[in-house]
Length: 247
Image (cartoon, rainbow, N blue to C red; front, side):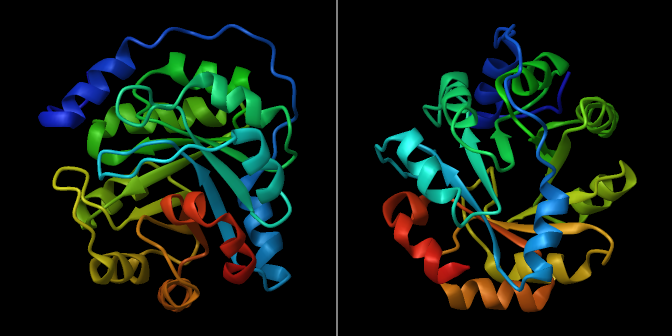
């Protein structure tokens, strides 16, 4: 069982544990997100992971064509994040499948993953890396799921928000760590704390800054702190053309 949780996090995890297994044959090769981020760095391009989402508990809501969005972003983004959580983010496995069918860059299954069955479904639908959130998993569960994700040659994006989360992620062998400026309990954003946490992380892990990024100046500040990549959702959903400025 995942950690003891309350409020919307409890609801979303309980819903995740009930998700059905998707049995289908994977239709694309694995695209390695870490290698692609390093390639972008060698070419002096900012690594933007462009997210497709329709809703979030923080108040975001938008419509959009997932296929058109993905086809546009594949020309600029290091990868694409797809929200597959149903209840709070109005995502779906169908969204993941539809985007996986039209792009040849790494795809993140962004969800509240608490079971191997969800990882199986993500692999089958075409994901290349999978979000694992330290806040909702026990350390033993996190370690086991990281190993399970890698057994498919995918990678785990391990999300942290504070020093305790980061220590757990590192103990569990995370190579790709997401630093979320948003507190999942209060939904408040703290960019100063995010930058400090990124700066404290070892140099040999790939660091992804998450949440609340709206300008190139923010990207440069996060990059100065040590961020290697930047996951941007709400802002690019509203203004997709801005990715040309961000890279």
